[in-house]
Image (cartoon, rainbow, N blue to C red; front, side, top):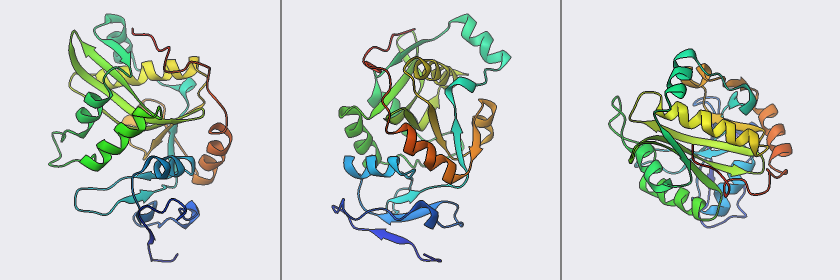
Length: 236
């Protein structure tokens, strides 16, 4: 592909993504542009290690970073301070009880940002994934107030993390701890964290080559989690 960018036509699901090895190195992992955010397109993207990420006014941009940030549920790191928060039992955690509220919380601009990449078309697309059983949320409550949470996409035994937010200290981290515990119970093997950062590293995320990540997807997306996963999630 060189320095050119692959363009995908909208409403043409047969117009496949290029191989992720064709992703640009600068910016790191940019693979393609255009297309649409239909359920079929998004599921095809995730199965192949690709995700959408773009800002208002940009075309849909598709990414496949190298290396890839991942978290294995059985190696989640819990700091001493986070353990103290967990012992205080200050929050109630639920699953799939407020998906729309969680994605809106993630879409809200952060203190150091004036805009969000979770645009209205993205919200609509992931709400559609939720209605079809592919997207899920974890909510962290203080009494009746939603104070943190996360959402992502599931295929097979993989949870593709998309975003998290927190209005109280450690709220999103507690949501992730509870998610990891549930995923272990349901026989999930991998959490995709997409792009690495210090926050994820502190929780145990590691970077692996894109080829290794795609090999894991090939294996894990073809396997099923425990029967009843998500529909049997308890509140804590």
